[in-house]
Image 1 (cartoon, one colour):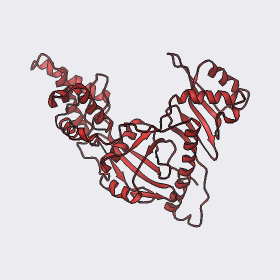
Image 2 (image 1 turned 120 degrees about the horizontal axis):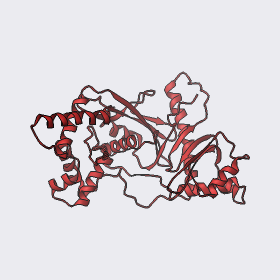
Image 3 (image 1 turned 120 degrees about the vertical axis):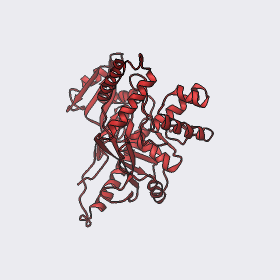
Image 4 (image 1 turned 135 degrees about the vertical axis):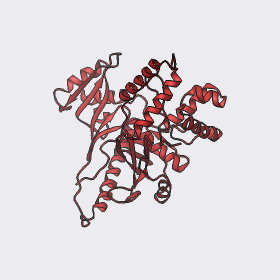
Length: 383
């Protein structure tokens, strides 16, 4: 039986504290249920199997869980109700014109009203940490929940050194290696190193049309391999490739995230009646296998971690820390999440105001711009 929680994964190079220190840090931001006026909330909660806030994975690292609840407030309904209110106000003759700022205030009020009765969805994000290799795995490839986890970690620890594993031009590198492998060239033995292609590959054209071609359920070592080679020679690049790294398989995306991870099954041992024990052992073994595949990928692709890289998940620089905190308070109190509003309020330049807005977006405090370029304050964001 396999209890792996890593069906998909985003991978980070990260330096996290030891397990006991992690328990203390995460306890500071334990999950609490949504209140009536909150749009979203997130925090760390006990593992549903082991009952622990931070679960030891014997011989490799530890695991923890982030719980996020988000109110479901459809944008189309908000916009429809907003239009109705604007039309009613104009028809009443109380005003001849409604400014963009007034519309934004009305929209925010609508969202608050709808939040009181809105349903919510729950997302559980599992994290696995390999202490030896300093690799952090999150079981999602979606940007928003990834940001939520990182912001919570930064908030409870004060600072966090982490970076995504980014390989320059991975598409071209994998594409060339796959072509060498399939054409049985002299480079084939080393083309994919310890990896073998399986029965799925998605290719994307390099032109502006960006046409996608997907091959499923085919033997990449068989006759139809020539079809893939023809497209690669025509300039198509690998967008996603299913790889085998004994005894696991996964689909490698062009952004170095993993999908459809398949792990081996494990026989229960003498403590099979202890479900939590088996969960720890299974995920510890899986983490070792996955880290071996990731380090082999990095070696194969000649990956070198940058000596120093400024990332969105690092702590706020000391010289801007107080201004950042003041800007967060201003946005939360005023509901005005724009670069110009912050510029005027704090009398600072555009670049610095833009940095503050970007930092708040990255930390989940404000939303990304909508189709009109407007942002909203996201309750429960990590400051």
